[in-house]
Structures are given as C-alpha cells and as structure tokens.
Image 1 (cartoon, rainbow, N blue to C red):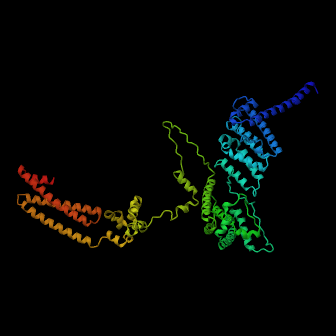
Image 2 (image 1 turned 90 degrees about the horizontal axis):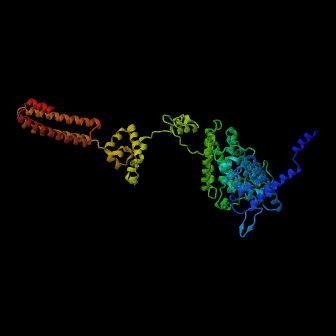
Length: 637
C-alpha cells in the first residue's frame, strides 16, 4: 500500500482525540441544560439563551435542520440519564429531583425539562415535533405505574400540544404513543387508564379526524364470551336458562349476521323472549337497588362480567347486571334500524315489527330497574339519538365539521358570479332526497300530504264557541290568521253553504252547524219562512211607494208636456233602481232581509229625488223660454 493511500485511509477514521472531544462536548452541553433545569422562574426567562449557548446557531431565534437534530440528540440523551438516575434512587420518575424549600415545592427535573422544550417548540425556536419525541421516549422507558404520572402531565398540557403549529408536527407520534400504552395496559384491570387515553385522543384530534372512525363498520368478532357448555354437579339453577342467557352475547358480538339469515334472527328473538320473561317475573325491589347503588361503586370494576354458572342467581339480582344486558339489546336494535345500509342489510317488515315490540319491553324493564330507572332510560335514549348523527356523518363520508372563515372577494365589473347547480333546485331538497331510504314510497305515501275533512278541521273552533267549555277569547282559534285562511279554502272546496255564511257572521259562521251545540246553532241557522215573509213585506212596501209617487206626479202632468216628461223620468229612475238591485243579487246571491229593506228605502229616495229634479228642470226651462224638445234632451242627457 502506498503512503498516499494509507494517509487517505487514516484520515477517514476519526482519531481517539476527536471522539473524546465530541463526547466531552456533549457532556458539557448536557451540563448546561442541567443548570437550566435548576434555575427558578418561568422557562421564557432563560430557555432561548440556554439553546444559544449550547448550539451557537446560525440564526439567533430559529434553528436549522442539522442544529435541530443535534439538539434533539442531546435532549434525548439527557432524558435517558435522568430516568436512569430516578430508577436507581427508587423515586418516581416525575417526582425525581423534587424538593421542598421554604414551604414551596419545586418541580421535578423531568417535568422541568419538558416545560422548557415545550416552550421552545411553542415559540418555534426549535422543531415542533421534538416535545412529542421526548414524551414517546419517556413512556417507553417507564413502567406502567410511572406512565400514569407521565400521562397526567400530557393531559395538563393538552391545550398547548393541540395547537395547530404543534399538532401538525406531532399528531402521528402522539397517536403511536397512546396506542403503545393501550397495548401494554390490561383491558380488565386498567379500564380507567384506558378510558383516560381514549378521552384524550378524542379531545386531542379534531372531530373530522378519520383515523379512529370505523368507516366499514367491522365488528370485533374476536371478543368472545366463554361460558360453560355442560352443567356442573350440584348446580341449583336452571342450566338451560343459563345457556340461553349467555348465548345472546354471540349475537351482540356480531349484529350484522342477524339480517343475513332468518334462522339466526329467530333463534335470537326466542332466546331474548325467555330472558325478558325471566326479568319481568323477578322484578327488583328498591331495597335491592339501594344495596347496589351504581353511583357509590368504586372506580375499580371489571369491563366484563364473570360467566360462572354458580354466580347466575346473584347476577340476576344485580341491577347493574340487568342494565348491562338491556342496554346491549337497545344498542343492537339501534344498529339494525340505523340508516345507511344496503338493501340486503335492511331488516324486513316483519323483523321491524318484532324489533319495535322487543324495544318497548326492554325500555319498560329499564324504567322499572332501580335505582332511578326513568332517569337512566332518558340518558340512554339521549346517547342513542346522538349516535344516529354519528351514523349519518359516517355515511356521508365524514365531512369536516370545522368551517373556515369566508374570504371576501371583490367581483370585477361585468363578471357574473356562477351559481352552484343542485339536482333538485337547492341544497336542502337535494340532501333530503339523498337521505330518504325509499324515495318513491316516501313521496307516494297517502299519509304524507292529506287534506283534512271539513268537519275535522273546524272541530277546534267549534269547541271554542261552546260557552260551557270556558275557553278564554284570547286562546280561540279564530285569532290565528293561518288557521282561518286554510279553513276558508277547505270550506270553499267542500262546503259552499257554510262558506256563504262568512259574509254575514264572519269566520264563526263558516263552522258546520252539526258541530255546534243547540244554543249556539240557533244563532247561525236561519228559519226557513223568514225569507218568504220578508220578500212579501218588501213587495207591499214597493207597491205603496209607487202609489204615492203617482199621486205626487198627477198635478205636475197638468202642465203642457210636463206630465209625460215626469212619467218618463220616474220610469227611468225605477229602472235604475231595479238594475242596481239585480246587480246586488247577482254579486251576493239571494238578498238578505236587510238588503230587501235597504233596496226599498233606496228606491223611495231615488224616486223622490228624480221627481224633484224633473220639476226643477221643467221650471228652469219655462223661465228661460226653452222649448219642450230642448228640455227633453237636457233631461235625457
């Protein structure tokens, strides 16, 4: 090997001195952070100065990519040393280095370090995902007991970790950290801790996040409930009921299979009827409900009940056990009725009737189960109603709930804004058409739009008109304009006789007489002989008035040409009165007695006025020396 090649190889291998210098530099940098952890005061007072002292960045407020990587390696190494020191000292990880000075409790070393890094990430001095990487390393290095304290710190910083600039950088790391914790936890013994993790994820991720949504609706069929198949010796309970009861869990585990095979549904309903009959035959008393008060139970409980046949008698007396099974039934029924399924997955009509009857029995049993059965049932109904909204959201493809602020855009002059086209004219109608499961049946349903019968529609107003009912006038239906308007339209189509009474008696006269009590009916019902009597009376009045006019007109006829002219004018006035009366009759139908009287009085007045005008004109014509022909023309004009 030549000297030049040997020199090249040796230059590629770092010397022992250079490796020692790098290790010494890392140790010095970690000592700087250790001093920073012990400093009092908030992190914003010294965090950025500490980073600048360790890294000496090219930019004073924001690190480059290689500088971020170097700082992350230093912090992860420091975190590992702190965890190792805490384990060796036998202290809890999150309480390591915590001391009490002058009555004030100082923070542990690890929470202090996390606060400093979180401040730097929030202010964008360092890469935003660095805090999430440290939290993941910390949970991997800790026991489950310490992980509860670590997760408590994560929950306390949830609002800061959920900010958009940090969430976008570390959401996948946080999801991976929580999933690893869930895998390590026991689903039977660590139920509360598992629930805390799931609640944190539900609040940490946005509502429209699809990572935790079971879009396809796949069931966890591996969740098998094991129970005894053969009766043990010396058992005192009905083993057939025991097997029937626990066999329901096979159907609860996979509800989708019930709609595929009618035999499975028949088997399920038969078993369920046996269980419900047993619950109804053995109701629980209030004393048994108070002895097993659910609100006073401790936090340590099992997620699944034991299936030993020896415990069957005690479990049947437990209110929480019954509620557990009955709520499972409601969840299964709600799934079978949920929208968004294919035609083959929808239940048949007979199955819908059976579901409805079973659901009523289950709700009645829940209401009867102490303690506070009615309150418990209301809460379950509310939860299931909200679950329908979740099903609709999944069916529509999980659209985002967040609405971005609208940007005001200036439209240029002459530019037309293009409107979005909808299939049925607008968004709401298109959405309704999309949501309906069977649109043709929904549109042609006779109960969808039905014109009520006139007797049925006016019944509320007839009750208001009954004095014995004692309904105040402010609450009468006649005060509603919409109600009266619709009623007039219905009466115009179905009851013309009643519709004609609106002119005389108002809206109350339109009500069918059959609905009114006798005392009220007589007020709006006209007697049959009234019209003929009043007509004869009007005729006699008209004849007397005509005779009187003739007597008045006789002296005037003695003047030359004046009698003929007066007769013509009187007959013309009579014709005008007749035409007016005829027009009133044609407009309003048969004239009422009041109208007859009014017409007769108008006729008399018109005749007297016409006669006086004629006399005045004749006298004026004779004084001025006008001829009879001119007077006649003037009168006609």
